[in-house]
Picture 1: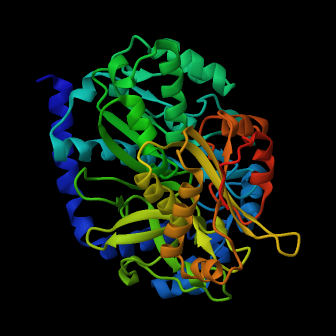
Picture 2: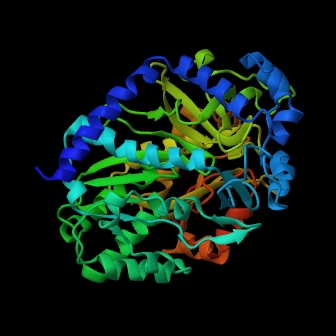
Picture 3: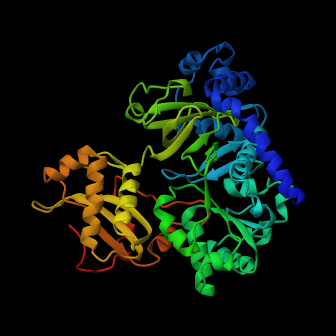
Length: 506
């Protein structure tokens, strides 16, 4: 046994045991954390404005601090950019994580000395839990590739600024540096496709044990390797045993990724965001993501049905229920207070607190009153693919088509890039609609009432989504395709890539 293996196993056991207390008592951990956060920030501009000194309970906190989205924090961020200290958190942030998000323009999320520590620790712990449960440490002795944003940061008002993954790159533990790929020089290449070509060249002869990245970009890396060698990924890297993924739902990509590898391997799902490393998969046996309730983030949960009302119902972790869709609200040691993250989750366990990510507050279709959410869209696709086992989907998005003429049907249009299309496109589209009817009674009523016709599948040319992302300046790194929208902005931009065929649906 190597020293690194021994160290990994010992640390894994220590971490699992040390975290057992807060897993059994998440409410106690969160109560203590809220008091600590409020006390720490009581002398900041935000803390004085919201009377943090007089906050004694969670009820006090809710009364003093309303829910805000990024737009309502912009004024405070501007004060930081103007050089002010002690605005949202003591001192100034050590980084800005710049993100375009999925629903708006550029955002500058503060990262502090305290918060970056938890980003690193939680990423490490995701791997340590895997080691603790399985006893497998082989990947520690192999090379590891992290498909990330550029670590090259710019200065924004004297604060280093860049993508979260690029920032985290500067904090990779020393004991992993020798195994980390790609090299710093290649990782700094700004053009994604050029960078990916160089990564392929650099890693082709490497003995990779672990690959980490957002699923669509991992698949793009696999495709490049396959094109260059004609081999399966599992044959190129025989010791490849762990895939770490996050950022988007893995299920729509699962079949194609494992087809590319040629065999099953372990996967570890993570839930990192610029605002905090929220959760990670802690078991290969039991599903869900372990919510990090002792990592500098105080969580509130708002039932999605009340989120956009005048008085959204704010709940602490003690008050949540299994199976309910909640919007996540964060207060953090980076100075975000009752911040609406925009993501929605469901609890599948309360002790320990485990969640699944179900979508985004603003990602839904309700052009006809159906309010179909992203979770329902992705489940319909997953189950339809199970019925069509030889079909492979590279990427897809869904948008409403509103009839412009009397007698012309309205419907949901699924724009799909297939790597292996279904033999019967109409049957594929019918199955999508049928599954969606099972998940959403409003959609079912609209179908049965002939207000909507069944889904229409529009196949797109190979590379359509890649070209679209390039044209909008979001190819690569941590950018994601909008999976579902209530307008046709994305759908219309993709329409030029339609494959003309008579075997469509509808």
